[in-house]
Length: 465
Image 1 (tube, one colour):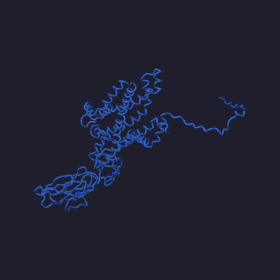
Image 2 (image 1 turned 45 degrees about the vertical axis):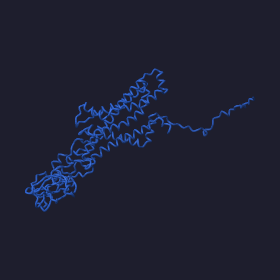
Image 3 (image 1 turned 45 degrees about the horizontal axis):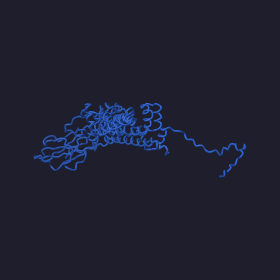
Image 4 (image 1 turned 120 degrees about the vertical axis):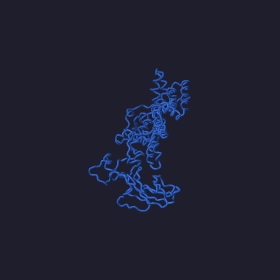
């Protein structure tokens, strides 16, 4: 076998000269980022999650800073504005105080005639009606409706009956609002049979207010310069009022405090317990792990609504009383197993890592390993779980309050407000729209933020950038 000789080259001083600066290779320097800085950078690229984060911040400001700006008592009733929607005309005409009417006098410009007619300008104080005699009638029945009567069987609400030989006038004082009403009158014969004909008239009611009411309501006008016939503006309600005349914006803020109190406190409690329970079970393993997980399976099988009812009985919550404490107890005691299972799986994976084995060999205690190495490495999963648990708790509170098992009136919450708005849903939809909108926006924002956090905190996505 021949061995080839390697040529030997003699080095010269020129071989040790520095290369020109132009030939130096470019150096790419990337600043090092921590895990959380990396997660925040990825979260900022998710527009939906970032917008959801801003919505949640705005919601928190609305809940806690809003009452400092909008200083309106959510329980205060404005009887002059009941179930008014946003943007409704707030003008009122200053008039003299109401005086009883005996049917003998007519307002200027009104004359008695045939049929059903008005005796004065219809206002929110009263609507005065007159009608002429119908031949063969033994008594009359007066109706009021919100819509024009087209059928004799759909004339509206019966207001009063009048004998044919008695008075033929009526003054309506029943909850008059500034809108158009339709009044109809029918005649009945001697056999108590309704005659075929009916008379109808419309009354466009105008909102009025007296000097004393202007003074008591503090509307911000100069009472000394105010005269009869002048226009004033009633209290401003940006989102309208409910069926009791309470400000919707103030009640939404008060309801947000209750809904978010339950929606944030309950998840913090049961997620924290689930983290400790699942971390202990996953770290210890063996029979202890099996026993703890069977207990978790048993808790999952318990019916939530049944235990909610039982807790209300235990805490002595009667009909019509708010069950906030039983709701919190039920959520905390029955909602932790999902978090415990998730954390247990993460801990069982992390406990086999090399750095955990090294810490164990160096004499680290079980509590040290759990709180120093394992739980911090599952913070991403815990944070995502908490973010998804908040909308679930908010929706649960809204659902229970909606069916009357959670927050009860007059305490405001979004669920109880939606329940109260059912009775006026068709005529005044804004009373249901705004609390339902707040529930929907809050639940959607937390879900989208949780989805974005799940992607941002996933360590496997670090190499995909």
